Length: 109
Image (cartoon, rainbow, N blue to C red):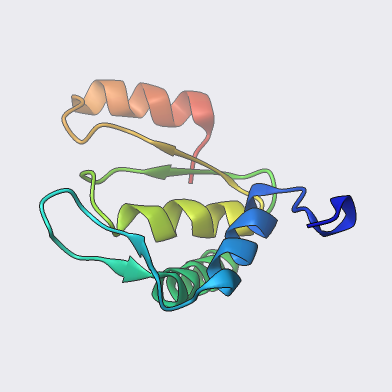
C-alpha cells in the first residue's frame, strides 16, 4: 500500500478493512455469542450514521452511549464517528446524579 492509499482517519481505516474481506467475521464475543461480518458491521455503521444525521447530529457533537459491553455497541460508536461526532461510554451502574454531571459536562446528545 502506497502512502497515498493509506487511510488518514479511523473512518477511512474502517471502510478499508470492511472492503478487504466483507464476509470475514469482524466482531465476536469470547463466549461464542453473536458475531458480525465486516459487511454486516459496515451496513450497521452506515445505518447508524444516517440515523444520527437524521436526528441532527453533526461534526463536533458529543454522543453518549450507555449499554453493556456487547457486539451491538460497536456499530453505534463507529457510526457516531462517521458523522464526525465524538462518542463516549458511560457505565450503566452510575447513579443518576453522576450521569447528570457527566452529561452536563460533555453536553452530550
